Length: 252
Ligand SMILES: C[S@@+](CC[C@H](N)C(=O)[O-])C[C@H]1O[C@@H](n2cnc3c(N)ncnc32)[C@H](O)[C@@H]1O
Image (cartoon, rainbow, N blue to C red; front, side):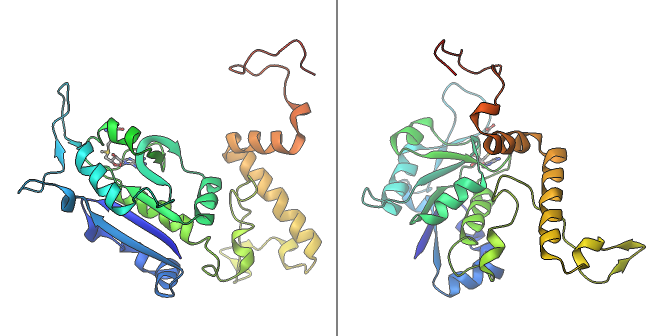
C-alpha cells in the first residue's frame, strides 16, 4: 500500500479534499493510506511550542529543528525508505515526472512548513527534499502537501477509471493536452471541430497531436523548447546556448 504521512500543526485539515472523489474512494479501497501527524505532539514543553523567533532578528517565527526532527524520526525511522519532502516556495518545482516517480515508490513523508519556514539545520540533518508547487507564497504547506499527494494518488494502479486516462494528459509526453468537446454538437453558434465527429481515428489522432503541439508552443515556450530538443536529439542543439558550459575542442 502507498503510504503518505504528513507532519503539520493543522492535522484537522486532513484528509480534506483527499477524502473525496478518486482519492477518497481509493483510500477507502485500501490502495493508499494517509496519516496526519500533529507536530505539537512532539514538543516537550507544557505549551507544546513548535516555533521560535528567527536568529538574527526579523519578523515571524521559525519551526524548531529539534521538534521537527523528533516528529520525522517518529514518523519515518531510518528503516522507512519513503522520500522525505518539505513543502517550500524555494524548492524544486514539482513536475509530472517527479510525481510519477513518487507514485511508483512506497509513498511520501511530507513536512508542512508554517510561519517563515523551518530551521535550515533540520533540512540538512534529515535530508529533506524541498518541493515547490509554484512561484507564489501560501500561508502554509498543507495545501501544497494535498496537491502533491493528490497528483501521486491518481497515478496509483487501480485509481483512475480508464488505464489510458493518465497516458495522454498534459505533461505526460512533454506537451499540454489537446482541447476536449462533448454534446451538444452546436453550442452558442460554436460547432465541434468536424474531424472529431468524422469517425476517422487516424485523423482524430493527428488533429489532437497538432493541437497539443500548437497549445504548448503558444502557452509554454519552456515546455516546447524541451520537447523539441528531446524530439530532435542533441545534434539539433545550437552550437552554444548562453549559460552552457564552454564547448570542449573535441566536441562534435
Ligand atoms: C508563509 S510560507 C513561508 C515563506 C518563506 N518565508 C519564503 O519567503 O520563502 C509558509 C510555508 O508555506 C509553505 N509554502 C508556501 N508557498 C509554497 C509553495 N509555493 N510551494 C510549497 N509550499 C509552500 C511552505 O511550507 C512554507 O514554509
